Image (cartoon, rainbow, N blue to C red):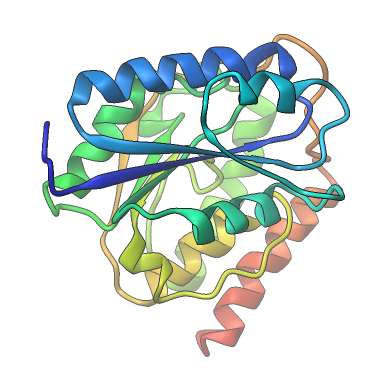
Length: 235
């Protein structure tokens, strides 16, 4: 997989993930070193109140700290502006995503077979380890996206992705929270970029509670899908 002409930027949004962030960074370093690719790890801390920042500092990553809690979408967008790579990866910091899956997400982009690669928890109809309730919600969003813009995906809400920096330069992201995945997918699809899914392993968090509110954030995701379509003149 080695290509000395390519730099991979891995953006990791963090909010109170002290139990897992160190492990994620260590595993990402191991995985990327094995690929032989040049890479940078960019951690954006969303004003954590635990010691996530202190842990991240131990690993020499590029660390950006928000002065107030702004949301996952905002943290990702900041990370994207700091990324120098021609290929950018995004991965959650709560341990649900396996860094070991990153090479298979990178491969289609490196081989110029896709512009956006989504790591799907449900590829091929498998529920993976994700909760069935979450799967039901994702299926609704998948159907809406297919209805409005005509593309079929199995996991429109996955936060584990790889995309070319050229793609980001052709869209304008506005989301501040969890709706960023939907906004990104819709806007990228509207501009005719190639989208591919690959199966990933998934482990629901085993500590604490997710910050995602199924009702509030679900409504925001729904609005994001529709508004992204309307602004592009498709609804």
